[in-house]
Length: 355
Image (cartoon, rainbow, N blue to C red; front, side, top):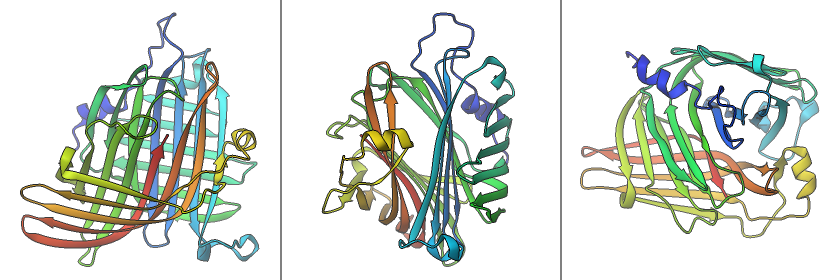
């Protein structure tokens, strides 16, 4: 497949205005990667975010790994079916750490380089004994979904590349896992101006599923909401087969139903300082999800059971307010009817519910 390089470049370009002395401190520009190994059940989130501007901003990193207990070395054994390892860290944004074209972000524990359809990503935290290093090339049709959707007091835009061919290595407490072409890699970009803790939220997921005949499907859902999810914009779900966009359901054709844990609990929280601040806070967490979609031609049903969850707490230090991102992952099954033919596929999912 030939990638639209011009569109890909537009998606990946930094939006933060470097050279404007009075540019707002609430600018945000982030690069998001989800890696999934369907064979072993491994799931990885890596996110690098720029906030503010050079010499007056931060580079924030989030790195979460979900590993089935069967894959864990005996000395690290845990009493859950899926173990979660995670770290977050921030550093002051110095001018020499970021190059706009071709994109380069580098600092302590991070290296992100994007040149046309080629990616180089490294995230490591030696203290947590976690590291990720991979090279990638865009394979799936890129989409620039929006550039100026209202979000809180400002706006947000995003684009996605729901399929990269990857090669690299993941290390968890000195246990190493090779990353090869059998892994799935999703990438998206978000950018804009808003403050964490405002009346904003969203529901998002990416799922990779395989049918018995080997056909691979990728689903990406996006629904922008207010904080309590009582109001929302137009939801939509993209369905890819292999690297090509096959179907879009949107608006009233979608019904999205989250199921929550019966009792409130204390989830695993990141970063550590926020976990300490909210140590006594209990919340109900997503435990299942069902999405039904139907239009005049096609229909789909996605059933999800979550098996691991982490709560990210993102502060706005100036206003002393917070956004809570429920990161959840699990197993999914899809029934899809396209042009009169029914397809059943199973796989794994990574999702966010933001309040």
